[in-house]
Image 1: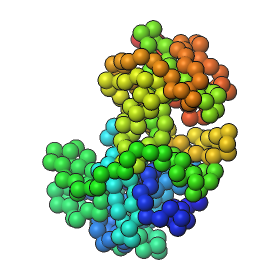
Image 2 (image 1 turned 135 degrees about the horizontal axis):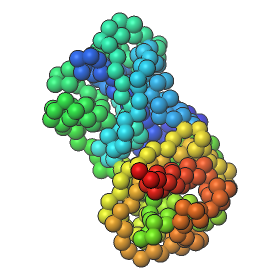
Image 3 (image 1 turned 90 degrees about the horizontal axis):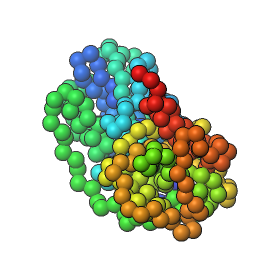
Image 4 (image 1 turned 135 degrees about the vertical axis):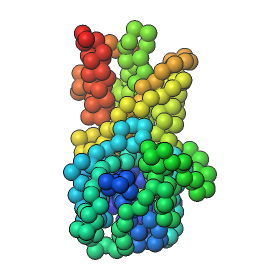
Length: 331
């Protein structure tokens, strides 16, 4: 089910949209913006991920569709600069559809002359393309664009752009469960966060989950309007009773290799930020019903991959293992 088909049954209610923004600059530091067909305002190229798509592939596809351009040095920005999430990234389209943008930003450079060869597709999404100085930007379409321009302006020593006011986010609920009642088990991009928690002996905390009966990290899915970090903190507290003084984003995991099918048949395309918890406090109390068991595991005591809850958890646990190996390697 694509987004247009979902809107026919979901209506205009807010969705969490996993998306990528493409920030291109020329040799003068100007940024490439497109005038949009829906509201006539200006935005960076970009858009929603396709099912199973990783962010860099999505950035290249959106750039090609909306501009007809290729950028050889396009790359995803490192965390935290690259992250997009939070209540300020709410957007209401002219036809009334509401969305909270979450995801990553990509950055690259092209010569100004590349615009001579631009050829947007015939969808009508792009009315015009133009390079703009960062100190002389046109009216922007959304807060996601304003936040991206603020990032570029910060690199250039310019002040941030003010964000437009947004409505308060909906109360926390069970967004993905509500969505499942509409889409059934079909694959759907599911942004979320996972947390690495270690004890004084350097052992990693894993939870045996009630749904899969396999080991996983503390974590879960975003609710509309949440920051990735807020999701990490909320899920850590709900599933373990623990709080972290700081949560540091380490990496983003997204792409076809992280698709997971739950025992009930629901399919998710995981889009997950991995955090490291520091200054952890509280009593470790597993969430009744959802967490069957907790365990602390040293680097050489970790469960086998087939005992971990799917490819996302396997990749994130192996990320931690590699980090431990690197930290213990002789200099």
